[in-house]
Amino acid sequence: MGNDALSSETTAPPVDFGAVQASPEFQKLRKTHRSFVFPVLAACLVWYLAYVLLASYAHDFMSTPVWGSVNVAMILGLAQVVTTFAVTTWYVSYANKHLDPKAEQIRDEIEGGDFGSTASGVGSATAEEATR
Image 1 (cartoon, rainbow, N blue to C red):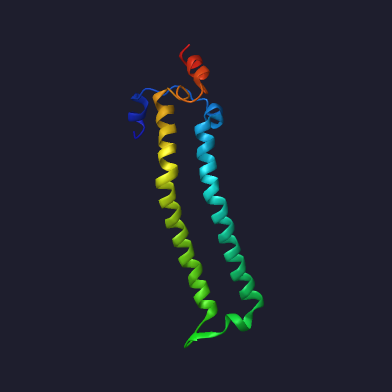
Image 2: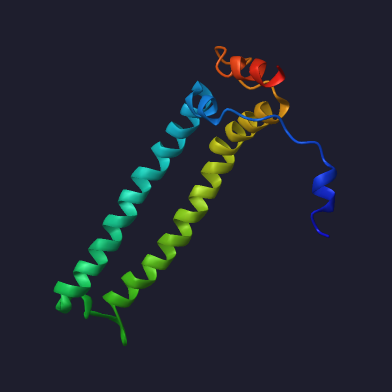
């Protein structure tokens, strides 16, 4: 039924994912991703933990009125939500500019069957083995 079209397609040659992961391009992509994600994750976890600790141990501070019945705890709680959306937007922008072009290049090389031919010969032996 729904898979009939898939069975008529030709199958792609096998990919040596170990060689892909060991390639300099993939390692650079991982480093670029991690250099953004880990510091931002740490900052967000500290911000969240600070909010939880303030809510648990600084009752007087958190119950300080700001406008009418709106207090500091409500403002900081809403700031948590705003931070989540801001970080998500920031990550999407970063990924679109820095991660996606590199990932697309690696994927295109893999799908084209010439992965590693432009990068220090990594993966060229596996491509030869696949054609034998």
